[in-house]
Length: 256
Length: 280
Ligand SMILES: Nc1ncnc2c1ncn2[C@@H]1O[C@H](COP(=O)(O)OP(=O)(O)OP(=O)(O)O)[C@@H](O)[C@H]1O
Ligand SMILES: [Mg+2]
Image (cartoon, rainbow over all chains, first blue to last red; front, side):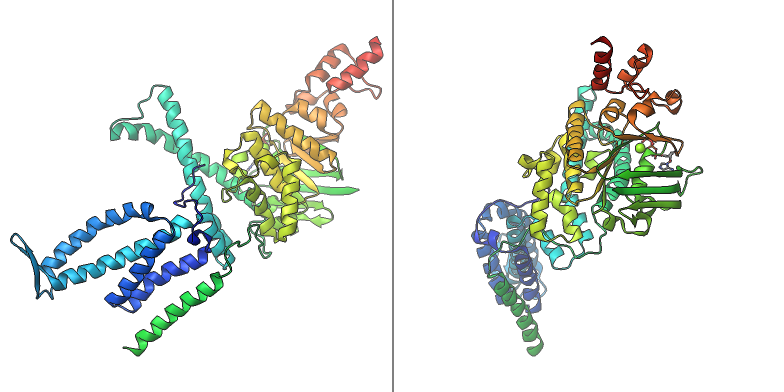
């Protein structure tokens, strides 16, 4: 079944940790290096999140994202290495270009921060089913309606794409050109928009009624079929994570 | 025991010029199987929606009279509250799948979670309804992987799990192929045998003839008749309401074969019974 998700089945330690803890980690891995804006802190979190990517056995899937963003990073290295305002100490030369230590260090700092964020997010999305994350958030008090919107979109978009595929196949079977140049494909696609949109408008009313009769607007306190089967240390982890955040804020205020 | 009372029900849609329902009154007893028939636009869907309170709580508009389900007046109650007394299944199986659940099992849980049913009770009800609708073996499937007939049975299971006393179905098989329709009718019949009150709007006249205890005949928003299939289909003026009686009835009419009460048979079994009496 097609479902918009990057989740990969697995049984790593991180698969067993509950979604909220992982989400909390992502937030902290992003915030703390901003609050305490030192290269050491950035490096520390970069090392932790990189280790977690390995623990999650998600390195292979993270690599393409890392390589793609490396292209950007290399440009930054070039520009800052050559032109950073505080450049003073030449580091090495490449033909006519002189790279400076200050600029390179600055760019490295940026690189480490970006890779840290990518790794932290990768740990979350590759080891967590989106539906589990959404349900966990609803259990924490996010409105069930918002939860419904996200979880249904994840399924309905692929569903609609497969309907479009079916119609395109049908058109192909009737000899309409649906492949080739952009204009050809656009021509095949445009006639689909009308029926597809109309169809979904009509079904929206019926879906709204169907949800209504299944208690979607019920004022009762919601219960959940799925229990949290995650490991018992997650509370400890969450408290620890929040403590780190609080300490870093205090540290920042004291050392101002 | 009476469990649905409709009294002088009147209704006009917000943008409608004419009454979609006009002075409708009838009573349904527990466990009865009621068919609603009538030509296109006669008000079948509107009546179904009024029984579950979608009219006038979802569609506003001008409303008069009363619908009482187990002595609760539906117009005065929340639709979600009513859902544990009376459930409804619509035409299109696709639009009744919530789309937010990844398995058939979880899909049935959707309504129960919203009503705040405790987890153990939820599991019990999910498994009961899936078994009743013969979907238990598909419980780990994604709802969108099911066939049309299975999907519609899932819609029914999801509603049944909320333990309504009455199940209303609005042309539940109109979008299904013959096999899918057959599956769904079979399932509805099973439910009826279990004592559930069934109210079904349906164009498939032979199905209604063989399953329904009584039929509501609607025309232009008015209740023309509420009686047994034999009486309804034996009406001389039936075709004026856009209804073509079952083929057995038409044959018996041309052969003038009537039952003891003086009405034409409506099912194969009844025809057989009458013919055996005549020819031995
Ligand atoms: N949303 C609406 N707004 C205004 N008028 C409506 C609306 N829905 C239905 N009607 C009108 O109410 C009347 C009854 O419609 P209803 O859908 O109940 O008929 P039906 O018997 O279910 O027909 P069908 O066999 O086509 O399903 C019709 O005249 C119809 O045009
Ligand atoms: Mg209708």
